[in-house]
Amino acid sequence: MRLPRALRPAFAAALVIVGVMGGPGARPAAADHASASARRMSPVRGAAHQTAPRRDAGFAGTSTCAPIVNPPGSCGDLEFHGGPIMRSAQSYTIYWDPDGAMTASFKNAVNTFMGDLGSGTFYDSVLQYAGSNGSPQDAHTFAGTTVDTTPYPVGRPGTPGKPLLDSDIQVAVMRAINANPSWGPPGMTRAYHVLLPKDIYVSLDGNESFVDFCAYHNFFVSGSNPVLYSTLPYAATSPSGCGVGGTSPTGSADVDDSVSLASHELMEMVSDPLGNAWFDAYGNENGDLCAYVYGTRAADGGNVTLGDHRYALQLEWSNAADTNPPNYHAACVAGPFGGLVRRIAGQDRIATAVLGSRDVWGPAGGSGSQAQTAVIARSDDYPDALAGVPLAGADRGPLLLTTQSGLDSRVAGEVQRILASGSTVYVLGGTAALSPSVDSSLQSLGYQVVRLAGDDRYATAVAIATTGLHDPASVLLATGLGFADALGAGAAAAHIDGAVLLTAGSTMPDATANYLANHSSTRYAVGGPAAAAAPAATAIVGADRYDTATRVATRFFGSVAFVDVATGTAFPDALGGGAHAAVSGVPLLLTDPASLPSTVASYLDGQKGSITDVVVFGGTAAVSDNVLSQINSALTG
Image (tube, rainbow, N blue to C red; front, side, top):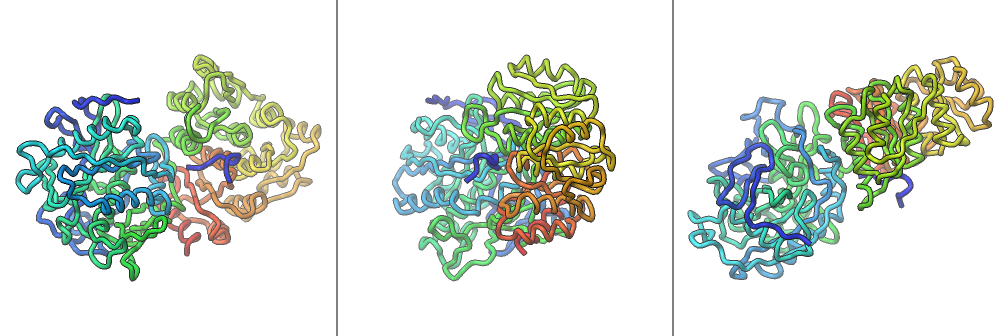
């Protein structure tokens, strides 16, 4: 999650669960306790029954993706299926231990790991996987623990042949929630991890632990709340099938084995909590594709440092680290890659802009960064939105896109999420650009609407500079007959508290000329056409649109920690990217959809060690995965 530039340096749950949360693999209610879907299991190495295709049944250093099963080249990248993710995660450990078999030191070590997980970069690999509810935040916290001494159900003592059932686990989760009211209600930000003693078995849909799987995550519904949980049988029950092996970085093989599985399941819960978000064509999630892959382990047996402790954790799949043809081991990462490069992409341009807003702004009156306004522009044309980017940055709010004919319901929902009733919403362009119904829809929701419009795109940009930005001291000029130069100019204008005015290519239109004649401002011309139209302005012109954007970034931003990237060949996703960059106070770079331009790669290489977060806007049709890999190479190579 990005912080905006100004902000940088009692629940009673029913025991009987009803209803099914949609998702692949949904099944009828089990034992009148729960309805479940999203059953994802960590496979046993070398087990007789596999629950997902695997490339290899070997030990550490192999992936679970099997070319023998999958067509060559198809195995690997996770695909987005439209569902939500866990934007943040609070973990709770539940030790169901009737006989006190799990030692205090074991429980303390697992709890320490849960607390450590939020302190390092390992968790960051999931940040690239945005869901229908926005992008995940680098926010994992250990929120609570409990020991449940309730005896196991009669007839199901947890022995082989008489295992606990998944429905028993769900009852235990609800029992823990009810017994700990300070935990609050379940929901999409809470993950419950049920840990069982050694030699206690669990059955899920006829599959038994230590035979068919090592652990799994799942969900059910309590009232209207999804309850997300993982089941973690004691991995050392089957060290050859579920263990880490080798030198122990924690000093306890039992702890090593359990935390490795816990991290595997938690990372899958974040990116695919309901079974309808991120998984590949064969049902593999980010953990599955790198199951039992540890990469290089140091002499102490560890491959990850979290807090002050060393762990041996299964790596996680990163789409951005994958290459074409897939380089499976390179795509199994320990976190930094996912934290450097992530993608914000919706099903269309309107959804992408909404997701960009959710990446920055928290709910009105709640936690997170608070928006003060919203800017609405037409989704199928770019001129008004280009000039509106600095307004979004200055007045602290997103730039959202809607159709000409009316207010899109997704935009209405996002405005209501981030803005309190009575807040001001700007609508850009005349009624030919956006129907008056947009205004009336916003007003009916309780917002004050200010429409900024002129007779044409040039006059509208002047209206934004005058009424919206109150005649700032700096102006960046860019052609209004194309979008590329103005994209980078918008983020830069926001950064220096300036405005974007438009030229008619190499000609100065009357509205812009009149404004400049009546205002003494510092002027920059971004791109060749604008430089020709305003020869007295300071010209910022590159060899092409990509070079121009990097020159703008260099001129106005200096050393940066964050950058945004969008395609330079189409405007829809890039408009949302420009506003995201503006409110974040970072540059917007442009790229060719298929390959990162050399000038952009050189710029990123020059920022190596400084940049810690890159957001790419749009899906793979807008910016290919190859570009994400090239960005990573420029920053880490």
